[in-house]
Image (cartoon, rainbow, N blue to C red; front, side, top):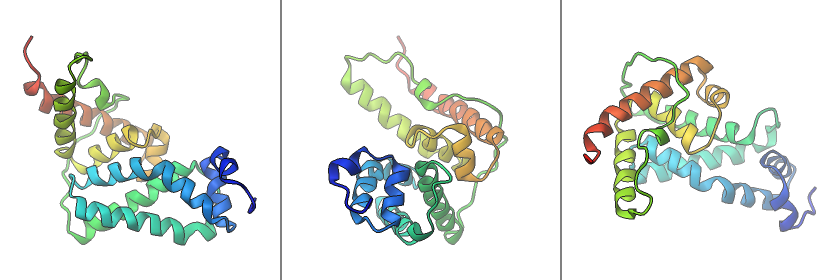
Length: 197
């Protein structure tokens, strides 16, 4: 697979691209990076409450971890699960080094996502939509780390409950609980911000 054209590389799955990269096809990394840089950066940035200087550093650290881990890569899980697991671990290391104090919150079960928190906004009112998006981002930043992480992995990385559980090292039921309480909390934060009809 070392002599693949860029069009052929574009057609490969993430897992096959990573295998090509592991086996010496440097161009495969470029395709993976292009595919995942946006979502991964947003995930890291929002986990850090939009602190860009730290997010930039940790984002680069995650890609360096991927580069360093390529020789041992095995396609035993979905690539995005593996990538976000690297990111999650880097964030945990950062919080530990910064003596990050985690919030202790009871968790319940749910499959809800923050996309359902703000319903039926007028699609023709672009300014209103932008304001609501900004408020949702701010509200997500106020969530406890565990809830924020679960929501961002679901929304930014489009990971399933099982994949989020694998990334974060908790059970699927705990992920459901974190999502439910995170969405409930978002509703509580955003409810006073909704315009009265």
